[in-house]
Length: 228
Image 1: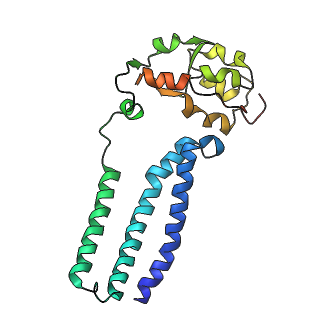
Image 2: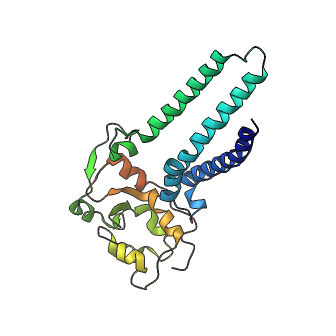
Image 3: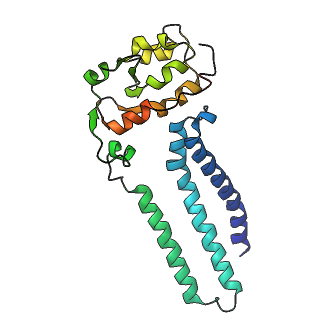
């Protein structure tokens, strides 16, 4: 019994740390502009992939141990069938979480991102389609094989819209990575803005609702946290 209590005390700290990390990464996904150094992709990966592997087993172990200790100390509940029933129920819950974790999502990426926009038309993000959006009033850009609608961001860019417009409708990866040929990379803050304007990967299918959402995003008020 003492060994069990020692294990519980040790893993309790792990459970607390895992809970705090889950909350932190969850807020980082929603408020990613406030925590630019982490970034949305990293926050999503840790929140949805890494931390559940730690949090769920620890939660199962501690909650089941607490219930069994409670049943043991209560005269009316200290019965073997009840303890077995609780163990089976909690183990079934763990298996259910495990199934949800490892089960493949039946929805393709385009549908996952736009499930609330039923009935909207689809658009394939081909090079020809992207090239049509090459003006200040309709600016799409490819960055690392991903397509973004930067129309609403142009006026907020510290380097003025003129530094972005030449790359509208084209692959602007090199320009972004070198600040238009000046050899300096953009800040982590600039990269953290990308999910806001993301339409999909090159060649993928998106929807007109996703495009409208990106185009109507409010521009950030403070621009990049570095010189233009």
